[in-house]
Image 1 (cartoon, one colour):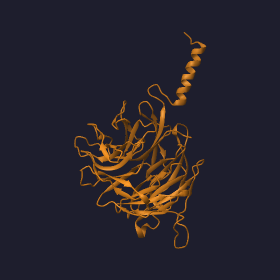
Image 2: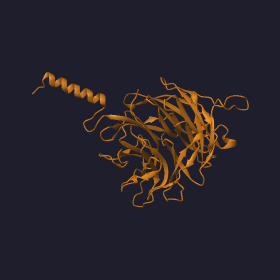
Image 3: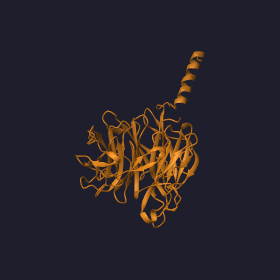
Image 4: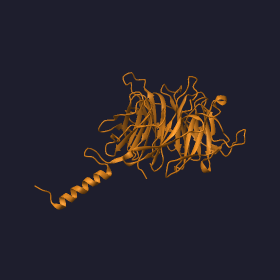
Length: 409
């Protein structure tokens, strides 16, 4: 029996819509794109995120070369049209950078496919973290070794202006400080052995692992960073591994806390001039059967804090885990009520992201070369396995960090 003319038109329209929306017979449409870095072969693996199941499908021609050595951080510009990859480069036997680190710029095309554009050098060496401002106008890059590293041991922040139509980067000079020759510096110095930074409100906080301090800058006009009165905030006897910001609250994970074998989370309240003060109730113990918290994330609706634990102490469960906490109106933390909390993930997780639709959470796991996906219950903060399996091959060996985008404008 042949289809009627109307039937043929209807079927054609359905097929056309399926192609446009990225729909398949066994899932929903593509709700976002994900890019995962791998250091073993200096690659970027690309995936499409299924709206209905959270399943990950590898992109065409993925993985892509990272255009550098040792990719460690990835940032998506607002609008999703450009991806910036931080390639840390290599170190010599004395731990000094060989000067081969860079920032690689990629254009995002149809179906999230990446096309390499160019690389740029930062003011310092061994870049390891980056973020953009809320408008996608400036890129801030954290260098672990400032130009004067040999004498100070300090790191720095390099600021670039972003051309929104081409993705090209333009160095932003430091208008506040000049060198001995009377020239403007092209970087903003921070403390010793910086490991990460976060923006919140009008402040940028850098975590300095070398002396366990936080170095705050104010966010000024035209990409400038302004020196604050409290230029160095000591954290005390801790082993700080990450920090995150929600409103007027800053959360620091401490892997060496005496409060709990699994470490702790120290909640701070922000004040004038980007100052920080420990909240009245003090540090919060990490959950039982956890250890070595290495990363943290506040969900996009600012209701929950998730802490990524690199290793567990339970010999029956060698995998790592995510500890979930409710953020109260005071900024204090309470564990998410769930007997399954903390939630197991793949071995050796390093980074964590939430998908653009606020349905799913993913981790990159360096030790076993996998990605872990979880369903995120926005009403309770609980995590659960995806319906069609929660573990995916990363296709980027020794995965470091990952990033997601919901659209391409």
